[in-house]
Amino acid sequence: MKFIKNNLIILIASVLIFLIVLFIFNPIFTATNLIFPYSLSKFDIIVEYPIVWKYIKIIYLINCFITIYLTIYSFSKFILTIKIKIPKKANAEKNLLNSYFSLLLGTSDKTSEKIYIQEKGLYQNILVTGTIGSRKNRFCNVSFIKTIIRI
Figure 1 (cartoon, rainbow, N blue to C red):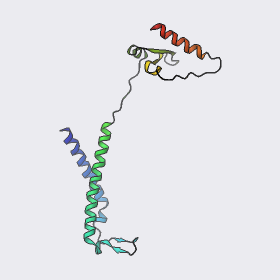
Figure 2 (cartoon, rainbow, N blue to C red):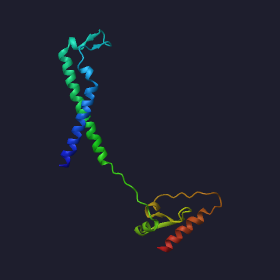
Figure 3 (spheres, rainbow, N blue to C red):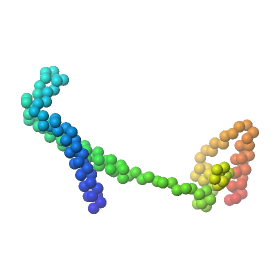
């Protein structure tokens, strides 16, 4: 039922857009003469080839409707597959309980909450930067040792 409803909505939208296109190009479809000035010899396709012009219009209208329908169908399927995930506010203590192993980095200056690197993050490379003598090695070693002792 949902499939039929979605396709019916897509079909109605396609028909509406098709009618708008038909309205915009109506002067071309109802013209009494249409001269091609860029050919080798100028000719009026409506007067000289009326049956060809009729089939050109029919083929255009069919292709136009099919293109509009497929575009709307593809776009709607694309929109329906997008799932926006709204991240929840992460609580470091709660994440610590969910993870088997995590590394305490310190506390945030602004919120005073503890900052951890979760277990998944520890399987990657960690870059610690600082000037000479800023105790980078001591920070890393102490953090790792405290975490190992805690386990």
